[in-house]
Image 1 (cartoon, rainbow, N blue to C red):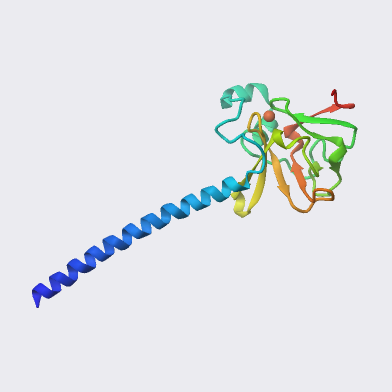
Image 2 (cartoon, protein in one colour; image 1 turned 90 degrees about the vertical axis):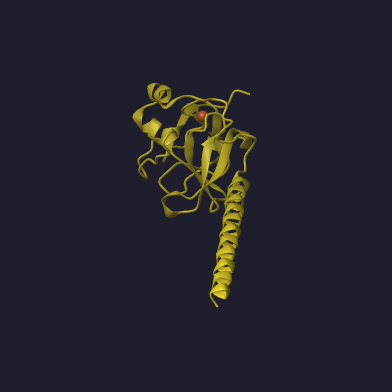
Amino acid sequence: MNCLMNLKSDYMHINLKYLGFVALISMSFSACAQKSSINDQSIATTATMDTFEIKKTDDEWRKQLSPVQFNILREKGTERAYTGEYDKFYEEGTYYCAACGTELFTSKTKYNSGCGWPAFYEPSTNKNIVEKKDVSHGMVRVEVMCAKCGGHLGHVFEDGPKPTGLRYCINSGSLKFEEGKKKE
Ligand code: FE
């Protein structure tokens, strides 16, 4: 009887070990699946978090940017709605990254979304931005970053006007506007 119980206990022990192993493997696969689905959300270009051309330390960025710009671009902060310099601003010109000067948007695609931040229905060129799934603050959103320096710009939503149906909701503090037609 004792022998039978020992056998049963050994069997259960092995079984539990096996189940633990299977659970570990499943978790690894699930983590991989999650990772790849995040990567699938990256719409733009060849740039990833590790391959931004411009790499600077926080101290270097702090010297170059204002506290507000640093908070938005490097700490993924958000300016208060309706307070940004370019929220209700419709001059003709080009918007560049406030950190590295990369061209990001033009006034041609800017529109009044009423959301409290500058809104564009399209970037100047997809290769200058990176879009990445963002699950912070209990929401699932798509973050928009500068492809050259990795600076946080804002988020893109699928409730924009034609022709793209997209709304790039961008912090004024991440942008630098230059008036006039773009130099070709
Ligand atoms: Fe940049």
